Amino acid sequence: MSNNKNKKLEKYAEIFKALSNPNRLKIFFGLATCCKPGTIGIFQPDNTACVGDIGKDLDIVPSTVSHHIKELRQAGLIKTRRRGQNIECWVDPEILEELKIFFSF
Image 1: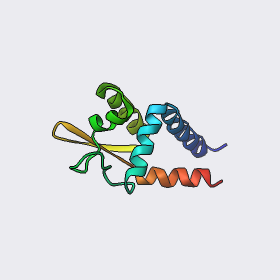
Image 2: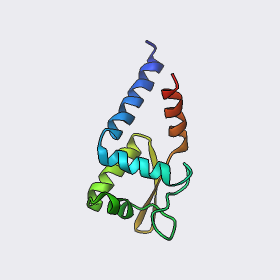
Image 3: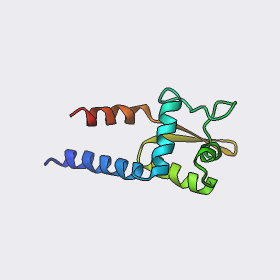
Image 4: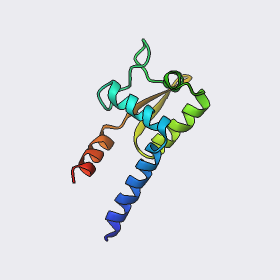
């Protein structure tokens, strides 16, 4: 197997490892289905999906949500940006396209 294929398979393994946690899967699914990929999720009236807001539906503390967000970001599944005291999150549309291609084999 070529080195490039090995790198891609390792990348997918990291993605699936990140999604193997039920709470991370719920966070990713929530972000992916709440709005068009690449836009910030709508979890509160000001149209942002912040770490604290995401945890409310999952009944987990903000520090745990932050850890899950970090894992999803490191796996390349989501993007984040700080806005004041908030960390906004959204799904990277490119990763959805890559996963679509991966599962179309």
